[in-house]
Length: 122
Image 1 (tube, helix red, strand yellow):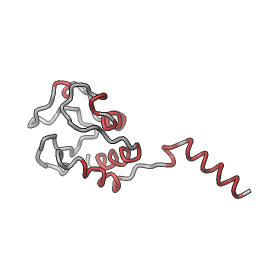
Image 2: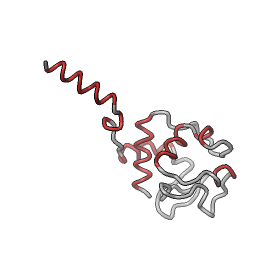
Image 3: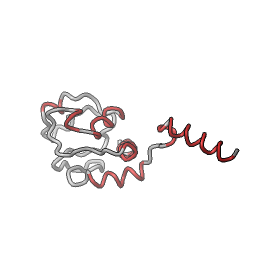
């Protein structure tokens, strides 16, 4: 009986990945390490090859005046969780013509964690 209950609980958790896999900003900070070569995240931090990402969640794409964005990025809309998830999965497909030379974060949990970290710094 216990085994059947455990299997049922596991099946339900697998059916609802959003419940089983919450966002973890601390884990997202580790994922952000792969972004640090091109981006900073601290408030008032400098732009690098990519723009500073402090406050990115809720900000219009292409909005930092001191950074030269592609035309594609300037017309990309506002960064919310869904937009970030799509973009971080595959930047070139999500916003064709953008300049970011990064293939994306393929692991869904890593993306969720990274988005949680970006939200924490927004």
